[in-house]
Image 1: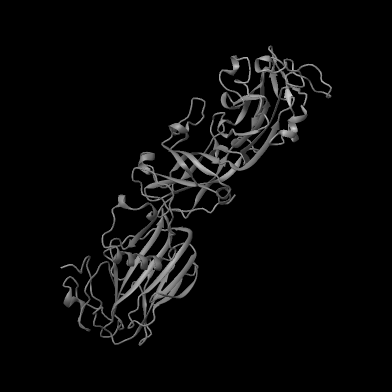
Image 2 (image 1 turned 180 degrees about the vertical axis):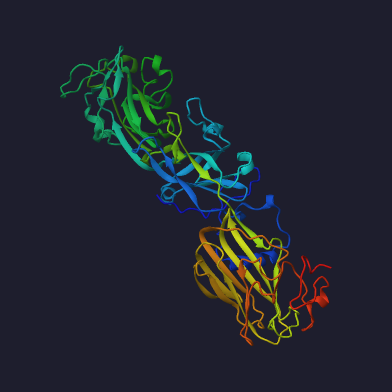
Length: 609
């Protein structure tokens, strides 16, 4: 599993946690970074306070760090890698982010709960006496409804522990509940059942199978709906008739009231149901305990003598079709039918009935449609942990450690300001005017450190003045880092040279091809993974570049001389200053703390009034 990991900033802590977030990439190119910083400075007139920094504007320190998010662990057969847990830190904040993998997101996995604890020791993570973690007691507890595919929690170093900072190891328990929702579809199911031996009747002592009734010659020929194609005429058991397997009624004179019952199952949700039914002579029926309808019966027929006013002998041929949809239920259902055969005898002005003149029979057909939910993929829920070491307890649970990474910091040399380098280009032996305005350049020297490691050294050379008649070429030379790396040189914003920096050979590049052109130059030397380096101390009693760890020298085209650090014709000033004007005006004429001479004599802070 390889998710698309987020670019990974974290938010400056604001007393809460942040969900999701896009990142910012740190620009490796120092010149581009400086240019962007200058642009932002002009656009953002009022900078935001630290606590107002949006989550997406906190830049990650150091390298990416992540562990797998393992669900259903405890054994290799059930363990599932569902994503990753990313950890990062800013200058004073650490973030833990759960991120499901691309494949798992496509499959439908979501995170429904997260629990995070960050501590300075394993014992700082809430656990039972037996060493099992207690996610419900963790510092950050979140329920996600609806489920999410990623979640970020940020905490300040101060809230983790006193004096927690870069280089310290912390213990992290990252717990989540992940679920894979059920996938299903609906199928329509249909069935029909007709009257047969599976329909039971009450014989006075028990429910028993119905008998097939003797069929009167007029029954099937006179039905309005030919139910006999799908059902049988049924009744209570009685005397055997000449029709094979069929019986006569027991009471052809007095008539009968027979209770029938048919149980059936409806799979899924009923959507429609119908019952086509008739009885010689009348019936009443119900579904699941509710009376639905009747035909050929009237009055208090159950306690009557079943004569004509109570049981109509003439309309049994009409098959009624009843809508039973509202009475159906998912699962077990019961169809109850009371079948009634009329009285036939003198009370109705008839001869006594016989099994063939007054037969009894029930016939019906019931059809039901239902929607059934078919499970294509069952619901699945798993507990998940950021992969690492097992907790001491018997339950499956893991923790991991993270070393808080140093954030890049920029340091200036000399500390607190811009350094100016001024040159006197006449030979020492000649009548030198010591005006230090033949070529003046400001050099911004910035080192980017990650902890004690130097990752980038940037020199920005900004020519300020050239009052000499001579022409020059300015170089930048250095070999003081003790590490190898790469370099890039820019003139006027364009890359003009790049290559490998070999500290044993050093570097010597032309930063200003023509000191009269006044184009800025930037030299960036980069070290990966970093170089142990510290700026040398600035000595206020050294005035001619002796405090520098690099050599910003010039070549005087007219004389061929090179003026390097340590030459009295190079003057280094650790602040903004005003060089003497016009050309030929000696420096001691402008700065009274400088003593005239060949060369002049300087004292600490000579440029101050």
